Each structure stands twice: as structure tokens, then as C-alpha cells.
Length: 99
Image (cartoon, rainbow, N blue to C red):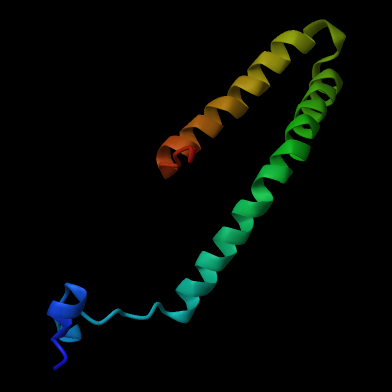
């Protein structure tokens, strides 16, 4: 005489109606999430290439704009604006480092 599921396996069958039905995401939302995921994969290599390139362009631009006498103060001003803008964007968006 076979036993019940509870006796044989230690658990009883569960009625699937106790869970709320899972709503399927809309197509546009799935596309947006896919694009964000793809952009996240490209972001790190882009920063590796773009970071040094941005610094080089900033140095050359400051030298061209103010001349050799004021390159230091001009660089401090331009880079401080870049860093402050970056911090403000990160704080507003709530981006957290995922370690």
C-alpha cells in the first residue's frame, strides 16, 4: 500500500492558487532592461579608454585656451567642474558601487 507524499517524501503537495499570478513585463520594458544591461557591459571598457583620453583632451584644451602661464589653474578649475558634476550625477541617480 503506497503512502502519501507527506509520508514518502516529507512534504505535502501545495496548491498553486496560493501564489499571485506573475505579471509579464511589457515589451518596451524588456527592451529597455536589455539595453541597460548591454550598456553596463560596454561601460567599463569605455571608461578605460575614455578616461585617459578625456584627461589628455582637457590638458590640450586648457593649454590652447589660456596658454602656458595659466595651464595649472585652468586645469584645476576644469577638472574640479568635471569631478563635481560626476559626483552630483551619481548622487542624484543613486548609483551604488556593486562589489
